[in-house]
Length: 498
Image (cartoon, rainbow, N blue to C red):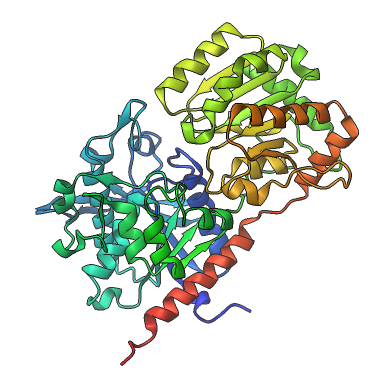
């Protein structure tokens, strides 16, 4: 039975990216799906994000509802426009428009590095969120903030609006999707945040002489979550904590891990309109058609139909294990394996894998950019999905791969450890392959094991079906979030001890 609080919960998701509007990684998928799952549980949910160039260009922002919203940035007041669109069946999305900050080709920086003014851009974003809610008379029970770009919102709520009746019953949750990206800036940029001077301290957002937006969120939020139980433990100790492990130990009483869900309304081979043929665990025939279609789409030869085809949909960065893949590239080609890579990221990997595809056009295809249709075709058409991340807070592509019968090979870390149990041929249990040592040879050993199993069709189909039976639906995760919301709100309403 749903609690009385839950049935009237008003939640604002604050995120720098949301599918289908803007995406660089799994964060966008989460915020694109979780609101709908919460609404199914009776919550009133809305989303706030910047209005980027791509959103405006594709006319996704809906209509302008506020023309000149005063927004503070340090000592300045810079007006914003607020536009309102919709997400997944009518969930309101409030787009914050200020072109000098958000009308750019990329979200956070070019392949050569971050934008020089990210501190200002996302301080402005957070201040705009705080101005938006009173302007719309939108009183919240929970403001749920995602990653460093929204990390100042819990700080504003606690340090600057604590006595404001409008915010008196609003609790804050801060979700760490990837602690490697913290929003670290020079100390001289602290004034742009507008936060009280005493918050530039070890117990505040000061971090090795500079400022840290993620630390501000951790310190000030009522509840902290990460996107898998394993990752919530890993980041409390070095090196996974990336310098914030001490802060997380201090605030460990409010830190929880909730595995991300999958949107099976979009990622389901039985209903997916973007793939060449639909299929299920009971009838896998369509998967071969999907493989043939993928080969045709990316220009690889049909001869690879009888060889393992590896797929990657990833940010092209060191964190994602691209260094391991690069080290093994020539061996992969020598084994006459197929490899399809889709993603964008660091320029060195753009150049390296583009050159690999040029030299080995019979085995390797690389597509730089974000292509949702091709991502679906890779999930459905590949035999093996490579996800050798050095660390991975949760990961979604391995979860999608399981549903599509595309067997994952993962580094046993974070959410990859939680979701991909190694296959045991003696028991017929498990859903993929994993390795523990982060080095090329360990990945190669896991790959060899998978290739050997690929050539044993009955066992390979057992692995596929095991994975396809796994259920990582958002409903389960949303219920866990709802329980934490209720806990945070109850604590907020509890009178202070005397």
